Image (cartoon, rainbow, N blue to C red):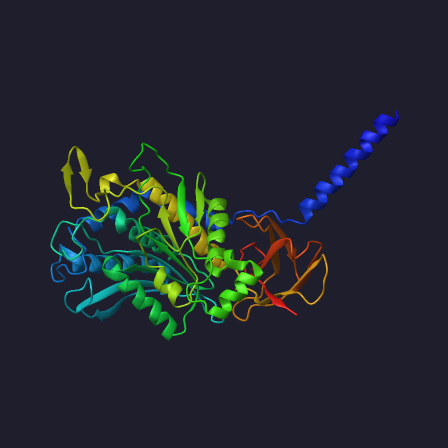
Length: 454
């Protein structure tokens, strides 16, 4: 009899502990509107776009600009026209324009050349919300000789895949409205030196765009490893820098003193992409890569990092270098060349769906909390955090205080609060914390890593 009562008592205590644990963490449910948009992303449309881009024979920045059928001029005109077709469903909210500039002669530009990026801007509906979100792929292509503007340069995976992704998101999202602004980009001259994205990044800085996040998609269509028979159509890498690229010596020293080398804004964006993307896309693993980019390579997110913006790069898990920057040929039974028949269109669809979920969740969410701080004036085993409401856009319904072990790559717990301060019974010396805004429907802003406040 005593044993029975004892067991019931233990079970009651365990249930109370479980209930307390659950109440401290909010269970996030997918938003039906975002899920519908995710489902609308079409592998068939992505394939058609990639094959159309390949049909221009070359999209090299030094190729023909006058032909209506071949060369970079025909390609960019088609991209712009296609984006304008999508914009017709936006009730005037989406506008499409060339971002045009002349690139002087340089290492990979043998004469001054006019370069045109294509920007489709879906204007936010809240006049008080100044945030801007960017998603991009580069539409230029190349083969072995980076200066060859006249060869057959299909560029199906590098980077018609990223361009098709950006265009497909524009098609799906043009029909919807968001408080914040989203710009869908197809940029040029990546292969010659990131010139297209550099121009947009510098323009954004000069014109004071409030860029909250930039998503670069480059080489996102291959699911088969080159050296092995590994087939992986569920993993995608997200590259992000730790200490911000443009950090001053003082800022670097501050981050190092806090152990915050792993909590730059771009690293928080990478975590956000993993959490949100895996929430909405089945059979997808977003792999955090703690590097700005791959060895010997660079992408269009880098100019945005250099201008102080938050940016990441998405790239397939296993690259096939026989398909990148290669003349089309067969040698010793091995096929070379970046042709569309070697692109996994269902895989590109997954990566596109992940991008959409991140963009939509951010653009629907309140802006980030401001002046997030962690109180360090007292020696205590508790943690007190303070912050201010965002200065732009709608007022949050509340905030999440995020917590993780110092050895963990991901945020492990979310505590919901409605005030702009929180005290947790966990030591600031033993955990990392961040704060993010959330609206009544559960859309979260990017997390903000707090600074010490004495």
